[in-house]
Amino acid sequence: MPTKTPFRSRPIAAVLAAVAVLVIPACGSGERRMPSDPSPHAAPHWDYEAEGPDQWADLDRDFLTCKSGHQQSPVDLPGHARLEPHEHTTVDYHSTPTVTLRNTGHTVQANLPAGNGNRIVVDGVPFELTQFHFHLPSEHTVDGAGTTMEAHFVHKSAAGEVAVLGVLLQASPGPSVFTPILSVAPRAMDAETVVPGPIDLRSMLPGATDQFRYQGSLTTPPCSEGVSWTVLGSPVAVAPADADRYRTLFAHSNRPTQPLYGRVVTLAGG
Ligand SMILES: [Zn+2]
Picture (cartoon, rainbow, N blue to C red):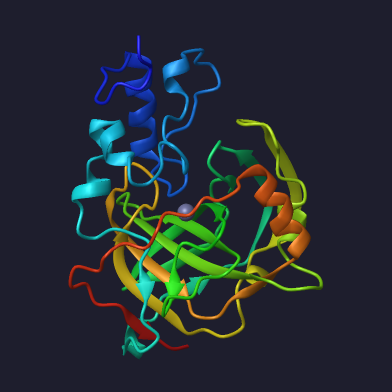
């Protein structure tokens, strides 16, 4: 019996897992195995290889938006984007007492404890930081040029809306604020590592405050739309050794850029 039948019916446990993911939407964690669930069907069934981005919509009915959506992410950001200084996303980061690193099978994800107090404010609406994770190479590009990696800081509003802050990472010799995270990322799928803090999240952002903004989606299945994106215009350094180590875990984990379909990307200053 084939194991990759499109639109296969899924056992209740898998459906419940999918519901759990919808409750905690997270770019980079479209589906994750429940630790107590022995069902092999709950394992991720999408990837960046044979079941890659061009196939996602065919893998599961819940993933159709990956193909049919017209507000998909990532996108190529135009360097000449329209200036809208008043639409600046306020980044209110401090430190977090700890993070729990998890190898999701698709990325390394740093989960923050509830009530960590880090947030962004988008058009007056506060979004609390829940996790951050990585892609290699970067998913967003600027005038067609990408960077070594990209970090996504995922936030949720009280109403359950999602806002993501994208930070482009460029390999550069010397110290990197991401070394304490990337150098201890667990190699085994579903393995977790606790990184003690305090961890200063502000140090993970560039000094320059120019930022691209647009309306998009999760960049992983189910590619849900309605995500407010803020991508910072200046990159942050990542140590080449850390990028190399991440590459041994996930050789590449970037969805290609998607058509804008008339969406406007704006550029806000500090
Ligand atoms: Zn992501």
